Length: 30
Image 1 (tube, rainbow, N blue to C red):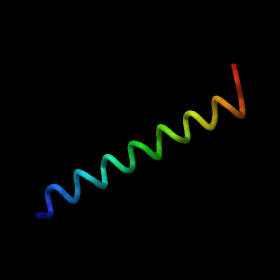
Image 2 (image 1 turned 135 degrees about the vertical axis):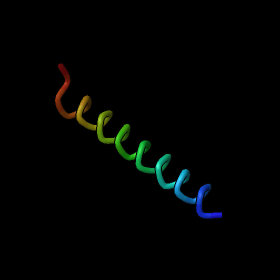
Image 3 (image 1 turned 45 degrees about the vertical axis):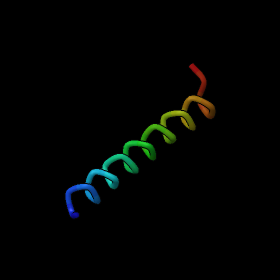
């Protein structure tokens, strides 16, 4: 179903964003 596929994509994007935030914290600890 297309709906569940788009939901998985949204979840994957959210995980990528979280990973980027964690990376920024590691690279630029404030």
